[in-house]
Each structure stands twice: as C-alpha cells, then as structure tokens.
Image (cartoon, rainbow, N blue to C red):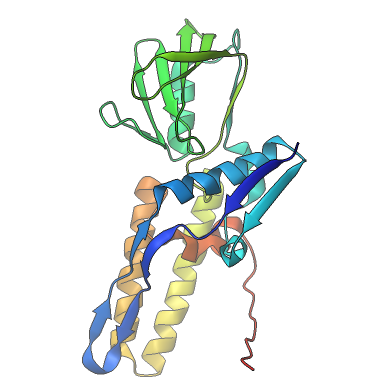
Length: 244
C-alpha cells in the first residue's frame, strides 16, 4: 500500500507585509500557523524520502519555494542500537536541524536531555516521541514513547529524524545566502533612492538587515520563505501572469 501525505497551506491567518508610501503606513507581516497542518507537511516530506510509493495531496502552496532537498536529506539523523556516536554530537545535530531544547514544554520540534538519555519530538509526529539511551559513546536503546506520560510504546531498531524546517542548509550555503541577500538589498535600496523613494529604501533596508541578523544568530527568521532562492542557490526567475 502506498503512503499518503498532505502538503497544503498551513496558515490559519496571513497578512502580507505592506507599505503605503502616501500615508507612511507600514503594515507588518502577521500570520498564524496551523500546527496540525505543519505536522502533515513535514510528514509528507519525510514520506517522499522514506518510500518510493507515495501519493501526495497538495494545494498550490506545494510549488512555493522551499530549500534544497539534498541539503534537507543531509540534515537528518539516522540512529541504530550499538551505533557509535557521541551524545553531544547528536545534540549539536538536532540544533543544526532547527530543533530547540525545551525541558518543560515538550512538543513537536523540541528535544530534552538528561544524563545519557535524549528525548526527541519529531517534526512529523503528533502522538509519539523518541527516546535514545546512550552507554558511553554508543546508542544502547531506542524507544518510541508517549510524549505526555513518557511510557514506552515500542522498541525501535532504527530511527530517521528529519529537520524541523524545510529551509535547513549547510553553514557555508547559509553564509553565501546572507551575502547574496545583502547584495540584492543594496541593489533595491539604490533603485528606490534613484527613483526618489527614500521611505521605501529605508523600509527595505531596515527589514532586510533585521532578517539577516536573525538568520546569523538563529539560522531562521520570520518569513524565511522569501529568501528560499538565496538559500538553495537558485538563479532569479521572472514570469508573467495574464488574467483572462
């Protein structure tokens, strides 16, 4: 039987960023993400890597720019019992995959660690989490657990943890992306100044610099999908839309 996945728009509410120069009115981007649909998007993506027999039901949002699928696959963790790997190496990898450490509010996209045990709540799961127990620098046991009670549901002989963001990439590619984002920003700022649109130039410079700082510090920013071309290294493309 094939696997099924849903990749549809995950916004309950979306207000795009806007600026009305005539009244100097700036409307910030605002949105509310549906957690259940976000989980389904991650589950659909994971299924495409886990199986060749997959059916995806998608809305037009499936064509929206994402990151590089090769980078996405490389930013995964595959663990088996008796595998030689340091506990701290797994923790660092989880952070690189955009998971956050949270000892109190254990939810999707987070992990917690105590002693030689790491518990991970995968981005594509809603009802189960993973517990990885170490002995020295070796994986001793992997269990599927109830995230609320911590009770073991099953023992696993392998887990494949996928990133908590579709925009994960390598550090060198992110550095390159930050450079090209800044170059494009300077180009647009110069364009607006040449047209005498000083307020527009100021707005785009402030917003882009803020996003750049956020990506430098955390690897993520609000509206990161706007920079997907830079992150994946694609060339700019232009298209015409005709209304009939």
